[in-house]
Length: 306
Length: 251
Image 1: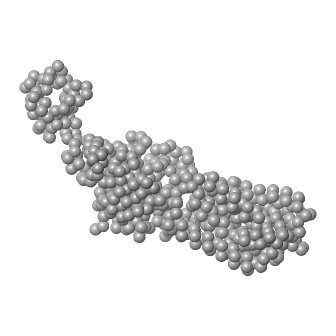
Image 2: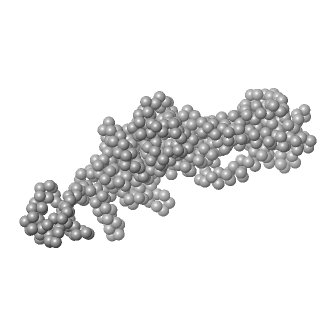
Image 3: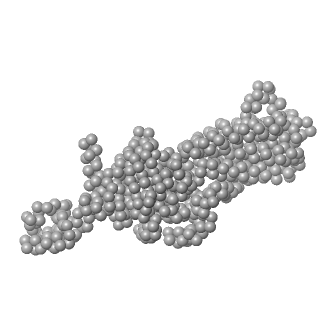
C-alpha cells in the first residue's frame, strides 16, 4: 500500500537560503506523526511543498500515492492543511467560509458535516458571525474546520495551538485523536514538545533543512532521555555509591539517573542507610524536550566540526 | 463536481456584498461625467451625423466604466487575497488554473454588466437611447469586459503590493480607456493620433459597442470584434499559462 505521505530527496532554495537540503521521510496511513524543529528548520517549507504552495527544486512528494506535481489535484483532494499563519476572508461569516471551502472541493451537500465541525470545534455560537469579529483563537479554529471540511485522509497541522488557550487545545486534541482513531493520518508540527510527546507515535526532527532524527517517540525517549530521581538533602552529603552517577543541579538538588521504579526504591534505600535526610524529592519521566535539546546541540557541534 | 461554480459564486458575492461601492459608485461617477461633459462640450464636439453629443457619450462612458470595473474586480480580489494571505484557501483545494481563471474572469464580467445595466437604467431618465443592434452591443460588452477582466487577473498576479497595482491601474488602464474614443470620434483627431488610437485595443471595444447603439462607428464592427477578441484570446492564454506555472502564487 502507498504511504500516506512520501517525501524523497526534496530540496528547496529561496535565493541564497537553502530551506530544504534533501529531505526524505515516509508516513504510514493511520500514523500520528510529529515534525519538530527550531524556527527556520524547514518544517513549514516542507508542508508548503506537500500542499503545492511551494515547488520543490528537486525530489518528489506524494500524498496517498498521488504525486503533488503530476497528480496535483488528486493529491490536494487527499490533503487538509491548517496553515501556520492566521488568515481569513473578511467578506464572509464562519458558516459561509466553510460552505465555500467545501464547494472548492466539489462538495455541495455537506451541511451535516459542517454542523458537526462547528459543534466539535465550539464554533456553533459564532456560525453567523463575520470572520473579522472573531478572536485569534476562534479564527484558528475556523482554519482547522476549513482543513477538515472535505474529510481528507491526511491532515497536516502546522503549529495549530500557537497562541491558543488551554481549553481549545484540549478540545482540538480530543477531536484530532478521534479522527486519527477513525483512520486519518495526522502530521503535526508544534513547539509544545509535551503535546508532541503525548500525541505522536513517531517523530522527525529537522534542523537547517535536514532530518536529523527520525524514530518512534518511545525509542527517541529511551535513547536520549532518562528517568531521573531528583533529591534535595538537608545538611547531609550524597552517599558515594549514588554520587558516582549523580549530577548537581542548582538549588541544592541532586539528579540521579534511574532505569525503572525498582531502581528508585534502591536509591532511596541507600539514602536511608546513609542517614541522609531528604527534604524534597521527585521522579522525572523521560521528556521529549530533553531529547530535542540534546539532538539540536549534537547537530550544532557537528555543524561546527564540518 | 468541480470547485469552479463555488469560486465564481464567491467572487460574485465578494463584490455584491459591497455593491454600494462596487456598482452604485461607478454608476454615479459615470452620470457625473455625463452631466459635466455634455454641458461643457456639446457645442464643440462633432460626432456622427444625426447623433447628439449626449447620446454619443452614453455608450462610450458606459463602456469605459465597464472596462474599468472589470479590471478593478479581478485585480483587487487577487491582490487582497495575496496580501492578506487567504489566497491559500484557493491554492490548497483541487482547483485547476483554468477554473481559477474562468471564475475570476466571469465575476469581473458580471460586475461590468451590472455597472453597465445600472448606467443605462439611470440615463434612460434623461435621454432616450436607441439600441440599433443589441447583439453587437452585447458582444462588445462581453469581449470588452472579458479583456479587462483577464488583464486584471494578470495585474493581480504580477503585483506584490497595492501601489504596484495602483500604478498599473493609473498609468496603463486609465489612460488607455480614457483615450479610447470615449469623448470624441477618432475621425476628429489629427492623423497621427488616429493611428495611435488604432493601436489601443480598448478603442475597438468602445467603437464597436457604440455601433450597437447607433449603427455607426469609426471602424467596421466586424473588424473591431475580431481585434478585441484576438486581444482577449492572447491575454487569456498568457494569464492561464502563468496561473498554471504558479507565477508569483506557488513559490
